Image 1 (cartoon, one colour):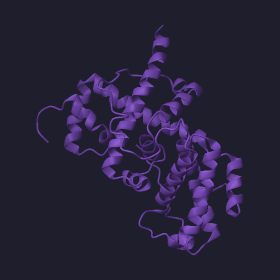
Image 2: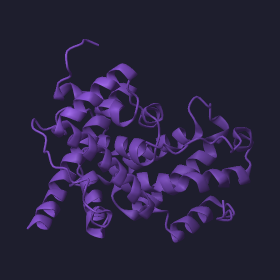
Image 3: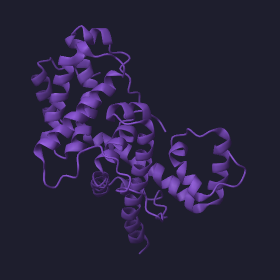
Image 4: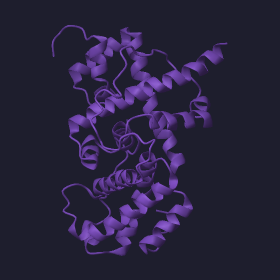
Length: 85
Length: 204
């Protein structure tokens, strides 16, 4: 890693690693410094993180419908396990 | 970010291979919701998703004795489900379906040159997760190409690792990473457009 300050473009190229917490410590420090000083990048990182969180939160509404579950066990000819797993 | 465990550690592979019905039922119980969600995401309707769900576990049941264990059982299940879903779409040849190959969509979902900057994280949860917002989230994800949609669904919604996602979709890890970044930024862009209106509404 060179010592020049990171540009916004470079920040965004690392956004996956940043969001997933997989950045090397040195790069992480530089990124955090940039984010403290650059409102735009901070907003992009925060709203991207929030986007993922929202999708994870609504996952719960797509549970397997009870009738679909019953027909699945019937088709597989398996006894339904008790649901208190 | 927390990642749920996707392991099958407590379901014995030996028991599965030797045909234990109890072990297989555990596998069904554990993975049927996520397989169903994935199938629903790819096929876009609940009847098709149910067909895919049943076919996936029927195939798995019949093929378990040949399962080599090179990938985890869960990744193997996801791979069967993806193939079943894509096969079903191809059979139907729906006129309005975008190409169902996991094509490299280099230019289809490319990041726009300029990024929308709007901090909507401050909106209250009840607004971010209203039924209208939920419907928009669903619609936004469906706007992505099949490949980006599946990568995002498996990695960010179901919590698979990059490697597991790559195995399930038969892509390279590098491809998964690129697609994941495109998917995340594209969804952020769509959500920013949507929540921007909510913010303007509040300011008015």
